[in-house]
Image (cartoon, rainbow, N blue to C red; front, side, top):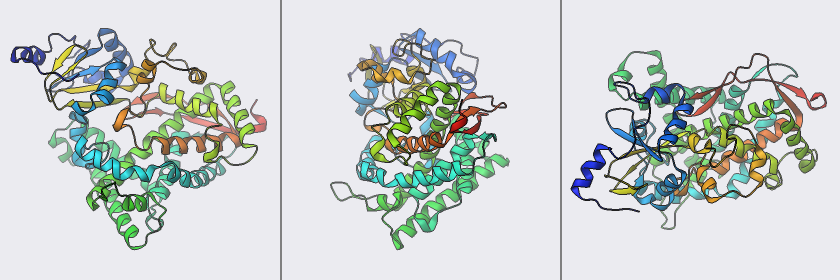
Length: 458
């Protein structure tokens, strides 16, 4: 509900006196150390403190929304009053451009209408052969019993498939080059969003030089791809489809919008899919019984052939495994909004321009909605879930700002996982020491596996 307030109420709102403060603030830096070091215990403590808690992450206060029904109100019911924004996105926009992830509602509606056709089911089905070919190439390079840094493998796989589906054939970069540049860009972007002081990025540090070089080269690659698609159209790549896309009014994306969208897709299409696949593999190495059930399902459905889009609905356990992986490890674990008008949320009134945070990790680890939330249980998705549980499961967001590439990423992960497990049984390597790393994404560290031929899986 959007509501007006009296000036006296406004003063109470701005003081935040009616809303509990998140526990454990440090002098000067507030709650930032919890987000940088080990967010889960702090997020759980915030949930216990209230449905909305005040947090201090810098000069401006922000409010962490902990109740799924209130997050649903922000993302779906009162979406017009809550725009993309807040300090994280505001600091990122100058570097990544005004793409789907960072754009405000007015720009986003137009961009989404134009781009939606490029991510239609038939378009994604057309990319399935690329997903399959690159997955085959990856596992063909493996040797039985040899340790594999699986997150690095997943990054390389996703970079190759993204390059082949996004860019025209004439402009395909080396996948290792693309993966390295994306990694350099993301590392620098994290610093610039978390520590937005201009003097930090002016320091003559190797990391700053790598970031600026990666930024320049990725933008140049995007512009070359647009030129190549315009002069040698192939009608196959995502760039070709984006350039051909029109909304109902016949509007198309400008060249600068195309550059911004390509950068957005390169960044947003790599890390989430690679990390989801890596976390799924980690969980399956820790639960060999579920891995064997998954292989049995693939044997039954595929009967020795490669997986295709027509098989996705039949691979029920595979879908549940990926769904449960995203519940346990939502890659985009913290999101932000800013209200564009005065609003009432959870019985509290907030003036326009208030910064809000919400965490998919926190919502999806709430025992009120997910019993035994730390347990890997793909079968929990076989039973109907309540509306509140659906509202609490937001790995791709909700509403009109839900990730446009969610189906693309899930199709890629399904094909990759099926390709791997039809040939190999996976075990954790002796040197594997997996930990959760919370940065702009949630990724596993030191994830090493050993593949073994299926006949030796026991």
